[in-house]
Image (cartoon, rainbow, N blue to C red):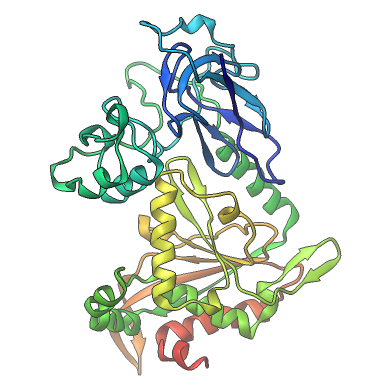
Length: 409
């Protein structure tokens, strides 16, 4: 008998513990090397735990819903055993230690590498299938025991594949009578709540507003949209212009890019912009690092990548850590106006909203223009109203005359 232990992945220094979701295998079942056995939810991301070796899952040490820490033993695999005719009974599993048995496991986005009932994809193959939007259960594997190889994934036809399973959704309730259902917060949702309360309690938050005429950006995008996509392989959106405009303003007013540490102000000589992204597990804010050194195409590619991996629960802890300034786009959901809450330890956040045609006055005449309302929330402890207003005006001017971004003026 050769026993291999399945361990909790190494968590970052800022994450002390995590919660196990649902085991995908039961004791007595065969497992393949790199097959995902369970997912571990932290307050930032969901981490996959692959089988370190092929064999038979001989023991589950930590059951669904258990609280675990880095490198804890989750299960054991017998690399020399053969699978039994029927898996061991569920009762033989170790019970959850921290979560009541009646409480449902926290929902999470399905992982791209999760094996289906019809086939197991290697990590490389799973990534390719995820990018193509293909359900692994629709692909015939040519590897050992029907395993889906990278070549199988590359040859798979997205048009012939059935759609992947839908993302996790909140529990639905019957509307008969007056029903209620108690569902524990996921670690991410609890962390979001904690940080929002922390932000409002520790920061002197004030919000200033302005409006921007998006016609110049719309015209520029319309002129070069097709050429841009053909050249760079990514669509030219609007977010990259907001990011570039924000960086231009932060360069002029460094205090808006600063943070508070005790009684000290830390000025950052770099521009790491957090982009708020909705995921099935809640709002996450991955970081675009050194944005001042990125092109419009670089920004669009990174944002598209963040959005896709946020939906699949594939963002890493490192990508969600840090940042000197954030941008939240409520406009994608139709928001007209909002007061965004600062993401600590940052000192400011830009809220952008839906661009709508509105009547405005130009040269004494009422005309129709595509207008977007901007909101800059800032920590009044270190940012005075003058700097906040001027920074927002600088963003407005850059968006209304995007050539400024090319000339750095």
